[in-house]
Length: 195
Ligand code: SAH
Ligand code: MG
Image 1 (cartoon, rainbow, N blue to C red):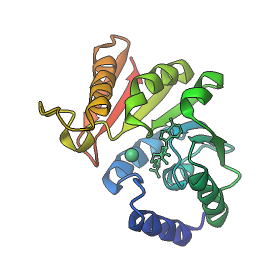
Image 2 (cartoon, protein in one colour; image 1 turned 45 degrees about the vertical axis):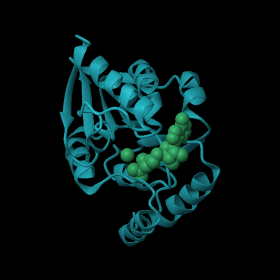
Image 3 (tube, rainbow, N blue to C red; image 1 turned 180 degrees about the vertical axis):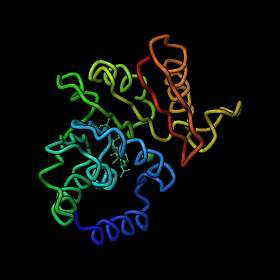
Image 4 (cartoon, rainbow, N blue to C red; image 1 turned 90 degrees about the vertical axis):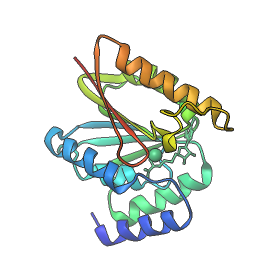
């Protein structure tokens, strides 16, 4: 993989305020993936491909990432980026709204990265649990959403997002079949495994 190109893509995304994964969040995930070496990865929210390209380094031999994005401009940019970095054989972009696409998927995934519309997190979780392999792992980014989720002030315009993120946290921490850690890295990261 062309790391210099990846770095350029990261800088450009940051300059354009595209909400790519934050360094400390990536560090946590990298460490786990280095051990786990997933074969099949599912990402919800590609943006310009940055996080998917980062994860692709840790794939098992012959492994693949399916990543879903609905914004056509971002899809076009992601496609170009993936070729520039030389990882086009490892990343498959699925174009469209994840709410419609997820129910059509039937593969099992070793790792799922949820990083799209916050108001849809409970739905993404439900679908992710259906698609998760027995010893799979689910990461949910932005789970603490600038601290709104853990504060009692909920009169801001992000009310629906906050309510749904709280519902996600409730589900992954109260479900007796799941084990979850919530980390205060980046914008908050939830890590869920089956017991
Ligand atoms: N994972 C990327 C950042 C993703 S930003 C990275 O770290 O590099 C979130 C992306 O999710 C945006 O590009 C947005 O267009 C997309 N998105 C939001 N809701 C979506 C949905 N319902 N279906 C598909 N894509 C969605
Ligand atoms: Mg994010």
